[in-house]
Length: 474
Image (cartoon, rainbow, N blue to C red):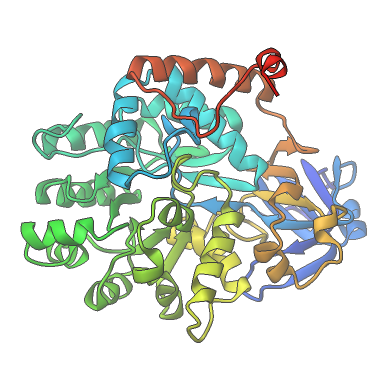
């Protein structure tokens, strides 16, 4: 429906005025001194401040002068349960298997719905303050709707699913049919149209039967949603599938017919040549979490081929994994790590900063199936915007924008954040949640969760009260 030429002009919901806008549109234009009109959650227009003030008279304004405005960042793999309440508590000198089975599994056995909702809110809040406006939760064990509520309370855009696996004897395992029924129940409870919706999530690895893999792919197709599972962050899955199926994991998935554009494989680090070909040829996407591979010592420097996926036209997004793997939901930090890892290989052509920033925005959005909605600043797209304050010394002097965004570590300069046209961070403070109350509750729930799980956090340095320290012999 068009507006009659003589219709009175109406105000926009908001004008973001005066910033230099990194559009990530097909031409990759940076529009200087621009204004962005936001209406009904969408970007209604981009132009000069004068033009948009005349077109949308009386609109409230957000002053973005001396700022860079970027599209909201996309975190394509971010766990939000258990780990946020025990961040930096799992020792960093144990194997990833020990971290999972000696820590994460016991913690998940004890988390309550209240814990999960708080953990999700905490992760979403931290993500927004780092400029991430879209978060894909790759599965939660017991309380997916509470997780969705926690994410929604912060105002972030998210996809949420219930974890599923059916290997006999594994904790929380259920038969394939029951697992798929719970998956469908979660997706239907979080229907399209909102900012927090559902998708199909399996643990993956070697914890799913062929029946569950094929059933999940069919369910995602029937419900018209995406799906994800984990595979090959280390060489363990390669060995497991050699015994189970006599072939590599991704080639087994191809045999099952489950690869394709709906599927986002988490990690896929240890792939052979045929697996890389299968990922690219099928249009399957991969979520790369470089911080996790380094923290957990999973061998990305020896085996990772994510830059090759980019060079060959594959679909790659960035993720931050969990609070004891990637450690922080900082997508720009993940971009910098991937760029550094790939630069150190000394391969040509190098993965440039502008390409890596695209993985954090438009290319990541496309990989996650959200490219028509988010990932760039274009008229008609969702108004997911991040305003970065370049008066900070880390922006002084300002260099090439792509290089500065990836290598300059500017996430701390995020000043304002919009999701679906709503201001969720203003002047570096959340508008949706009480950060002080969140901190207090997180501390209380963390201590209680550790007690229930019977876990003691090892401290590398002795903790001594000031009075005792002052009285000790010199």
